Image (tube, rainbow, N blue to C red; front, side, top):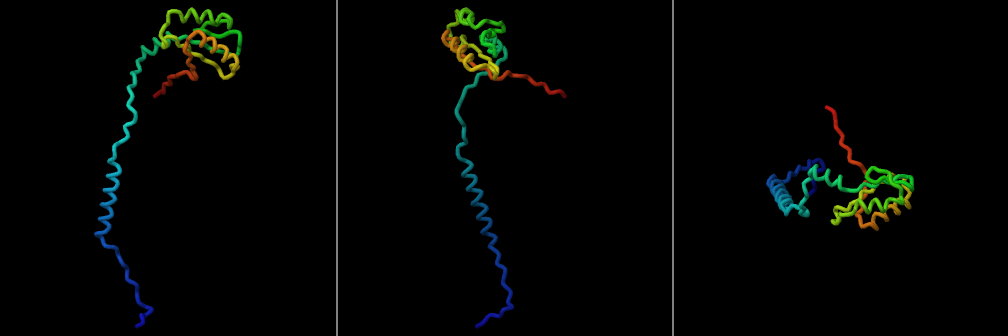
Length: 145
């Protein structure tokens, strides 16, 4: 038997029941995958940021500013000759026994010579102080309305 060439092909549609089953299976799959225990991360107890406590600590910390000049540094806003720095730092650190009280904030500009920075921070370390580096000043920006 031969088929005629002019016969039209029939359009076959998938059963409507199968699409509902597939959709249901996909929904179940994604719900199971999403219901795994959520990532809780590492538990941390963060201290509250109280402005007065930060202000007190800022007043307690010793501030040492380095400039391009190798002969003078600024200690708590006062210019000090490099030779006098160990004696002045020693007096400021007297009576401070806790490590958190013996903090020296070192500020330096990008043009400070490396050997000057190393020599000055070595003096601070030899006196038993903890060095912290301030890279940027915090600035409060007020946006006008």
